[in-house]
Amino acid sequence: MLRDLRRALARKPEERRWGMVIDTRRCIGCHACTVACVAENNLPSGVTYRRVFEDSYGDYPDVRTSFMPTNCMQCEKPPCVEAANRVVPGAMGRTVEGVVTIDYAKMKGREVFEVARKACPYTALYLDEGRNHTDGTPAVQDYETRPVPEYGRTWTRGETKGSTRKCHFCLHRVDAGRLPACVSTCTGLAMQFGDLADPKSLVSERVATGACRRLHPDKGTSPRVHFLDDWPAEDEKEAPPPLSNRPRQDCLRCHEFGR
Figure 1 (cartoon, rainbow, N blue to C red):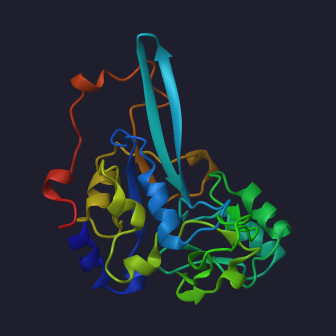
Figure 2 (figure 1 turned 180 degrees about the horizontal axis):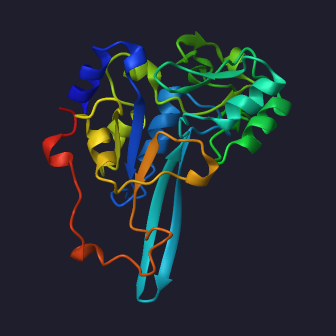
């Protein structure tokens, strides 16, 4: 993936389309991606850019638990942007590479947050209410107030308070030639990141197999986060075959992690 990333960064920004593939079959539910995201982005209490949902299904003794990591889908037609900008012009936007952005100086307060939150089908937005993890202790720790690099600039803790926040694919890392924190931390290699405009990238190869899905396709948002899972498609009448009998669709052998 790093080689894919370096190849993408050698091109002009407008020629790139950042995207992600999440293989839920590989997720072990360790939540390391969530922890890495909080640490990397110095997220305050009550704010998380990604969550891992858990669900158990089946009847004993054939019971399984599935895990589903989620974050902002970086939609090509983001309804949150349109909704927020009706309330506060310029509050949200998109980079030329397709990452949905927030202007913390403009998108302040609960009113615009609620409008954008209700427009988002993916529960990806959070309101930074100014809480700290060390509230109630003798002193708020210094690390909680350190500035954070997001959306092409550095923001102080005071500037992010009261703002709407969400995943931004760790653009500060990507621009420096590093993978998003969640991707580089995942021990199960459940997440891949890269340029969807590059047909030779790992994410493009996985999407090209036709096995990936996007959440809520009926919403017309065209998300750039794709999923691989064990669930049957809506038009399938029968459940998928057992994992042991299913051919393994895996491009990782020719894209060694971190190469």
